[in-house]
Image 1 (cartoon, rainbow, N blue to C red):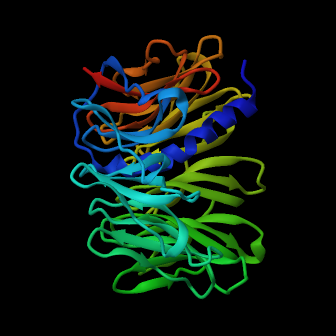
Image 2 (spheres, rainbow, N blue to C red; image 1 turned 135 degrees about the vertical axis):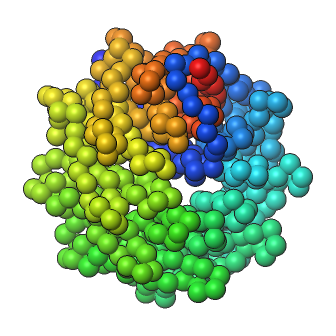
Length: 445
């Protein structure tokens, strides 16, 4: 049986990919999936021994990185069913990694330029290849988000490399310095379809405290304030301009999730304890995550809307639960401890306002968790199989229950990270030691 530490590491390892992949959840079109027939496709590699999928768009394009022949370096790739895996190359240096892709097929990531030890953000399109987004005068830049119009946001070092500023990049205007709220450093983490960027900025040079900001081309950088504490940061924004992040409370006695709008300001999202965190935001303004309860002895998954406020989603019998994702219909998915509160016995759940929290079960093992849900209610995640040694990705629907996606040939484990509304699931098949191949599963009735 695996230890709690191993389970936690496995979930943490997936976290970075999930943040990138979540961008594509709202871009897909719907085909219902019921009792499923599963086909697993090994995306292969660029000549080396491993590949990792970081993001996928609504059209089934998958991007990530792969080792090249001899495992001498890693290159960014783009994969489509029609053309297979394409090496996107580098900016002249040894390595690159594709992190984001929009519905138009524009890919964003980072690469080493020729002769440089510092990474630069890049944009790649089939028409123009890999374009260096450059910097704000320093040696490095990093992209964190990409919208449907091709706008990229992130941060770049300034001349001298002692400070970093948030930037916005478009093909028309190049890299634009978003400035700060008065301090030395700022960082942009998300951008919506209207070009609104959000992140955090220091307030005073030499002071580590920072505030969440919202930036638009017309209005510049706006300080969103805090929930009474010294610092806050924003990391999600929807098309309506609703911003979500986290802030310290008065006296820095706790850290809570918040929702901010221009009309309503910053709203505290907590269930009475000292800590809460928002993990997802949908187009309707519904925020989900987890919050400690009064006394901090337990934490529960929550759903928040402006109309309904904070809703405790409960648990599957244990003391703890976490919500990882929410679809446009308000269906929430995550994981919960079951009766007994063993950290090695957690189950994936699906929650709706009408049906409450439903235990999705496992694939025969003790542990499962759900990480994504599409507009049709198809849930994906990972579960231990019988014996609790290996994990397999799963797909679940209310009509068909939990389906084992399995790994591709040659690997004992698999992991499902994203599902689009056509039922295409993206993840990886991997060894117990961690190396693996990017994998796509198609599920059909």
